[in-house]
Image (cartoon, chains in turn red, brown):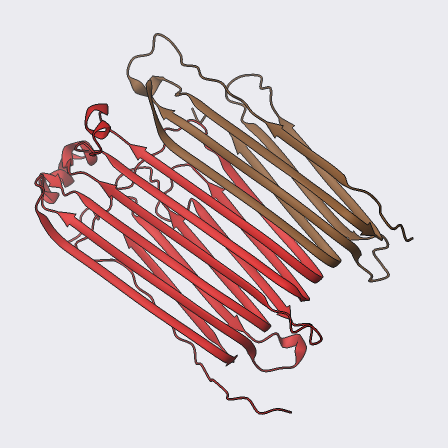
Length: 279
Length: 143
């Protein structure tokens, strides 16, 4: 038995939520098509595979047509763009894969997601070929909107007096990315994104979870390969109904591991919205 | 149970409802069904297959009693070894493809208020113990 340098990774848990001073307002879809697409995949294979999933949802709430023709969002207008991509590929070996992916374009509540994707892959290399299993996943949400009078946003005179006169303009971007390459082990990921809301109190949201574990059926106590994750949040916000920038927020996290992986876990969650009745 | 080339089974469906309509006499934009343009595709194929049990199910709703009935496409594929008890998988190449593109307006305005793309492609080669894909598309008017 050859000696390998052992990289011992204990669970890294990272939860990031609730950016201060950021207030994304999500656009609403126009209640027409209410499109829903649940899709599942189940695969047990000895051989090669290549698979791509791509989802893109662009939603716009424009208040009038004159301003956006010149490239500006008019007051009250919002836009969101949600992109999800998953590429998987193996050039041989033993693969078991289960995926459950739901795409719902409708307006979401605080717990709902427009893109909800969960997948678990268990892989073992073909030792004669030295085959690998590699995946790449990306979830990106961008939201932008101009300032909005509160009385057009919150239809309640009681809370209107608490919040002030306007919600400022905003521009936010949320990115969660991962690249994994394994010769043996199990990879589990969950990617969820929310880009349309029933009303302005539903926050924009991105959640990404990744875990790498040993494949217990092989008897090996580790997974082997490399993995990297990247999480990036940037946010800018204006003050009231002016074009003055009042806040910028940014957050980045990058991790990469390589070798014998006993356990590797990342959990990333970002939400941003208007909290009515909060401090 | 060996055939060098079992051929290529293709099963595809393209549904393109390309309709734009609005209800006249409505007051305000909330009374209008905005224009839309949607395309749904579901397909699967196999090549150079040996020892295969290949099963597909397709159901679609393209004509409704009224506008409350959603358009729907349901498609499922299952590929396994011909004899499910002997533990031997199907050998060959299998491919599946699903795609949706959709464009939607808001109120009576002609500018698109949302655009969506959903695509999924899978190709596997080798001994397929089990490949199962389910795809369930539904889209209608919520009154």
